[in-house]
Length: 169
Image 1 (cartoon, rainbow, N blue to C red):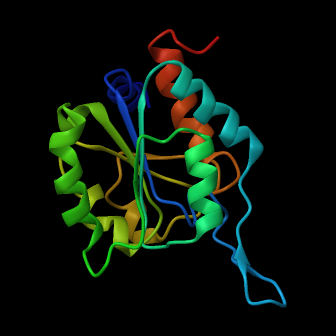
Image 2 (cartoon, one colour; image 1 turned 90 degrees about the horizontal axis):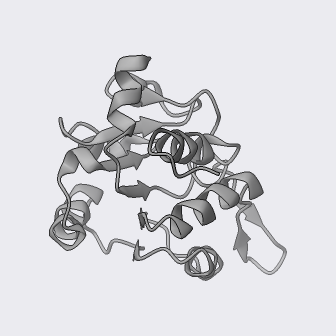
């Protein structure tokens, strides 16, 4: 674990998936047909701490729900990629990379499903996943959070980075 923790000390950018990472993966459907997701307030606290400490925060997701986008805008995510229009996440990531102005070993990516696999297989990125991510990701990531998606996994990785860099008060 101490070897893995050293990878957290270089992080400047957080990139997250939404469903199964920032939420528990459940989609609630109202009688009107509208969908909603539930975000974990403790993850939100850590996201605010990261923003206050001037980390770059990004989302790459195939979903495109307005309520989720509003939540991310309220949290002041700098880069939000929704409804990828047929592109896979790796294509979007490769377009984002030069805009970030960092090396890949300064990026933490958290995903939970097959759509995240190509990014998470890149050798230099700090690939992470929640405890309840699919088994295929457990085999390739550098760190598996002991917390499930939407139940503290996001806070876990942010808190590790900020504490190791002396920015978690």
